[in-house]
Amino acid sequence: MIFELNTFILLLVCILSALFGLFFSKNNLSASSYLNAGRSIKSKSLTASIVASCFGVWILIGPAEAATWGGMGAILGYALGQACPYLAMITFGERLRSIMPNGNSLTQFVFARYGKKMLKIILLLSLFYMFVYLCAEVTAIAKVTNLITGLPLWKTSLLILVTTLIYTLKGGLRISILTDKIQFIIILIFLIFIFYFLFFSGTINISFDLIQSKASNLISLNYFYGYTAGLTFFIAVFATNLFDQGVWQRIFAANSTYDLKAGFRNSFLIILPVILILGFCGIVAISLVRVDDPSTIIFSLLLGQGGKYISSIVLVLALTLVISSMDTLINAISSLLVIDGSKFIKYNLKITHLNFSRIILVLVSIIVFYIASKGLSVLYMFLLADLLCCAAAIPVFYGMFKDDTNEHVSIMAIFSGLLAGLMLFPDMSFQKSILVGLLLDVELFPVWISSALLFWSFVFATFIPLAVIILGRNNNNKFDFRKIKALIIEIK
Image 1 (cartoon, helix red, strand yellow):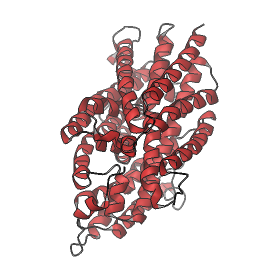
Image 2 (image 1 turned 60 degrees about the vertical axis):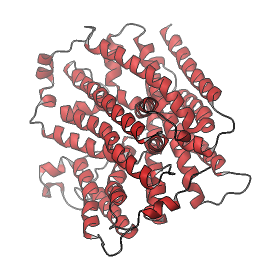
Image 3 (image 1 turned 180 degrees about the vertical axis):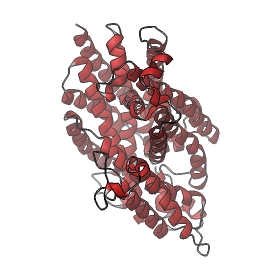
Image 4 (image 1 turned 135 degrees about the horizontal axis):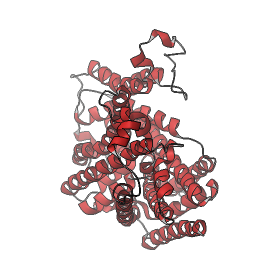
């Protein structure tokens, strides 16, 4: 009986989401509305949209799973890495809105500041990251739905993709932000219910003494792997979020600087405690010996002790989380293709840049559907995308404020960081890398390096580019930031 109810809920949520999005989408949508919602979004709507689009189904999986091997250090690093970019975006957003008021994306700045070669790198990097994120979200919701309803992975994957494509490709950013407001309310209500159930209902035995007995290393201040895990998550997640086009769209959609600051500051204050609490659930699960599958810890806690309808509540929350993040990702990918596609592809009169982006997204969704329906893991792809973002972060954002670097030096910095990072980036066993274990024997390296390859790969990928930038600075040929405003015109 409960499985039939949950299957009905799955269909109902998807159908209502699609119909709501279609109903409020405009038929003759301008490019400005599609890309930046007419630059009209106030602080409250911006907060709701940022939080809803940030919170994918990963929040029910990633933080708790990280806690099972990284402890409190991993939780803190994960939470700060996910939340702090929204504080940084206040500074970066103000800067770009001042030097390119007609802008819509980070890639537009990269093209105007550095040139076409740098644009290709950042565009591919951003698209790859968002593609992996899309695969991860669809795969995760397919697995969660299968756990709750027994529905095959491919059916959920197809239903979720079709639902979000239907209204997002028609309504653009404006409809994405509108649906985000509804999803934000649903997410907060259901998260509050789940937190009450986990920590205050008395259903689950949460005891500090039990945690001290069963998982003392995870809360110990002397746990080395906790520190490396926390720093790894912070560096990787922070850098990756800086290249999320969905975030940049919302920066340019803000009605004013006040709305930008308030929206992103409020988002930080909501995101940080939610990730901390969900991460702590991983340590609770360890103390209760419920970690058969680290990726389903939250669900094991909820479904293992909950009433018969708790699965329905979890399903509604998971579906809302994934739809809210997916419509942002789809719209973000589409917007990049609209903004930058014409620099590489010549369109004819029958196929506009907007229609071209829709065709590409349908093709991309077919690939996402295949990956998700097979239940393939995308964790390793995620880590690789994170490494790419780490190598590009300092070269891109240094040039946002400083005028003494150029395209050649920045590209050299990115590839230097990427090369160094890849030499230490672990294989799928996480026991060895190209340098440690392949070119040179593992025994030649101290344990604090060989046992933390992922950490050191991100450190080298992030900070070697900084050294290259500093060494390559040229005060004799400074960039004039006034050129950017003239190069970036409003897309009508």
